Length: 398
Image (cartoon, rainbow, N blue to C red; front, side):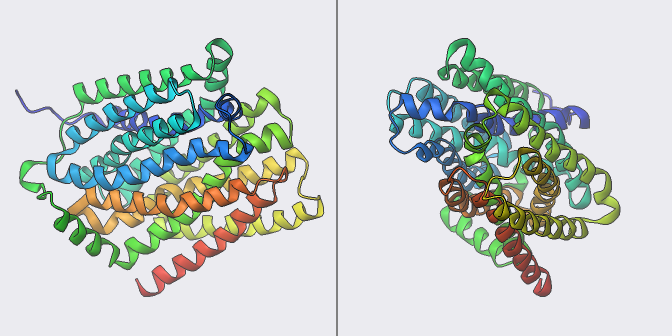
């Protein structure tokens, strides 16, 4: 078989956006159904329905540790293939779930499978690009990909209205099949045989030690996990905040989509200015602004008994998410910059460790939901400050 030519950049970026969007669609399309799923599967505590999200992120964190090293040893494409197979099995289990434990197991498998296309896609980019160009491509991917979480809740609501929440997982299955087929037919392997690492636990442990011993890698991974924890706290509680606290009903999808589009706008902005201004300058700027506006808004929220009017909450949320959009792409690129010689393992460690950090943080914020926005805003403020300290530690001695 003749060697495949590299994809045109535009097609490459769109394909990566589709592949990474499977994870986002699996989270955001399910959000409107959390309450119904909890009721139908007999969840005792309303906040426990958030475990439908946490289980997927937990599987995602584990999957990254496996997918990255395997892709460094056996190539990018086979690992992505297996990831889609596992994801599809998880979708089937969740769609047929008759109890909450079965649902969580299916979601765990979905996260485990989604990790391969998500994390190995970063390695695909790192195989061909580095530095600010890598950051620019990742920002473009994020800008396209963000359309999915912007419309996913509306899609989930539409599927529920037409055929019930179980068919949301049928939609996820079909999306995975499309991405799988496009990738298999068009994307060439980017890791040549001579650049592959021998797969062994010893080599993985050695590589992890090498990665985490680098202050830049460790520091930006920790900071990324802290900020993503705040964002995960929002995902966990968004449906309750909008539909229970603010009683937006089906308009939840519109408010959620507006916030998601703000992240996309910020990613597009970042892709335009990062080459000129650099990742570190933009990261510090965004993080300091995020922390400052969150502390200021928290003071206002406390004066409003924890429930400010919806428009003031949205103003803070949109400003905060613009900062988040700048941080997401730059954090990953900065952490990955020193690890081009082991991009698969590097992407796995950075992604997995940051996700493991974020899961308990997001769960604490979401589980503190008390019909006010205090836990969410306080979480953003405090975690922003902690992330600033982590970055100061990283850069001061990096």
